[in-house]
Image (cartoon, rainbow over all chains, first blue to last red; front, side, top):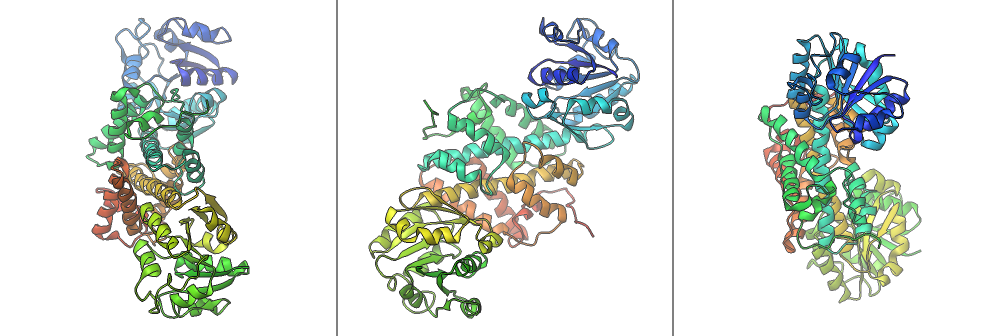
Length: 302
Length: 302
């Protein structure tokens, strides 16, 4: 089995690392937070002290960091996040970099061509499904890559996710589909909040509204999932308001590059920015409902 | 079993009438289009020549007309749509009027109080699910009514629909929940179109995008249903663009009455109006995607 590295032991990355370790891969891990890699490796795997160490050890490296800027730093940073020369200088020609973050598709296309100059294969591989599915191996991956990259890393991709969509023969399609999923997810959360807020304004019983909508043509995956948080009055962040400030911003950046209008995504982005600046940035994204005036939100069971 | 009347043999009304006839009710029907009632009654039931005749014959009268204006005309028109004195003058005290149209909730509340002056019970009973489910008895009804109205007509409601939500003890809640469902349905159709349009602009394969989204958190009932029409290049109207010009207009009217902001519903309404005036008023509501410039829509299998 291939030697595999994983960078970024956050909620998603930690879950994926558990899944790869369970699948039997020789796994090396790295995280900028002191002690995170060592804590993971107590139950198996190797904690790397630097990105350079990880890059030198591994045939396939998955990056599960927050955004494009962190990915840029991991790959090309002058001294790397680990202070030891960065990743690209250490990875061998023929090895594979698997980019799992949600980024502007045009940025992902750029990573592929820049890594090709170093003989390193690239998989555009954003992921979806949340931390629990990452840990159980049931997350979804929206990928695209050159055939030689799939040939070199396909088995690792399949081990990481329950479903690996292969959407094209070069970088871009994976990130584009992920961005479009985020467009819908963001608009649907904001629409769910708007609908529930109107119901509260009009004096409709929130639980009855939830029951009817989730069994009607107005339902969405996000309405069903996020309005349960609103009914419970629980805004503990599973995914925060600021994630959609970022992700809908990426959606709009992508469309702006081809001068394409997105009336609903831009409206939803404004709603999340309003929620963020009003003080709900770190709350669950369903807290976007708090921008609506003149309503009393459910407090949940007490 | 009670004597039941049904007004309006359009796609939904005809299906409901079939369902009631199959359930064994003595059914009287009326439609403004000459011959429509007679055609229905060939297989059973009684075709009424006027609203007054229908009102005099029936303990429970269901109205399945297009909008509030038609409902107003049916109930209180000087000579009724049948030219014979209208419905209210003919219905007996203690009988029940079941209002199945999608209307402004405040209008529905008004109908209830005006009928009460005539001793006629009222059920606020908008319906959902489409013609096929109406005919098979599987549609959904979002109802609210005074207890005496439910007592007098509850068995008929249960015969009309597969699921009858009882949402309150007076008119209003039924229409409010229906309006909120339409808010979500309209926003989700427009968002689905926006997302698919961005995918086409970015060169993503439409069928692959559909496959991924329908298995991801970005999915909605409407994305799954309506984008299948776009992939097939088939804009035969199952529900037309102008239905959402109307229904999102009702949503905005309802919210405006309490000065409540609806950023997404108002944006989606503008999109449907743009589609309508651009020439797609009578096409399937998924034709809202045609407002997006610079894309080639799928032509479907040829």
